Image 1 (tube, rainbow, N blue to C red):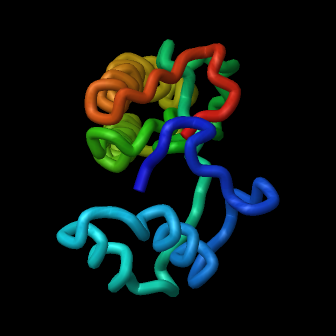
Image 2 (cartoon, rainbow, N blue to C red):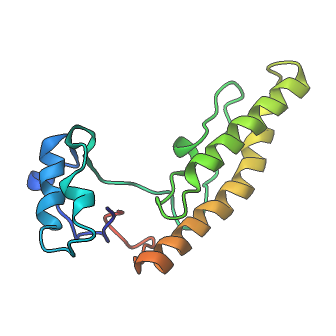
Amino acid sequence: MVGSPGVITPPNEDYSIIGKPAADIAKTLTSAWHPRVKPLFDNMDEKEAAFWKITCSSPEGVPEWKNEPRVTVIGDAAHAMTPAGGNGANTALRDSALLGKLLAEAGGFKEGVTEAYEKEMRVYASDMVQKSFAFIQGQFGVKIDDSTSTIL
């Protein structure tokens, strides 16, 4: 279940609710839904329910940062995306494949490997971040930009 910023607010602004309390929120929100859809929530595995506030990278794409030769980031640490389109995990896998390839080609750590990775990653990951914003707007009508104070 996904909602526009501010549509669903948890008790006490607690965005880390898990288990039955999170399931109860979903069941309350869907109590008047169509009988064909309601069973998805009524029969959920309550211990697996979670209420999270999802944060995203800027719609502008992956920012630049000062390269630290022996440290870099992949996946959500570099480019968190909206859940629309399902591109976050695929992009994280692409990150690990690229970094692994560059390390293998260099025969292990060498100066410039993480910098080359970050430069190439920013291009495709920025494209996917922008697509995830387009997907969430197209699929759910959610408009998120730099002025949005709460992101999904």
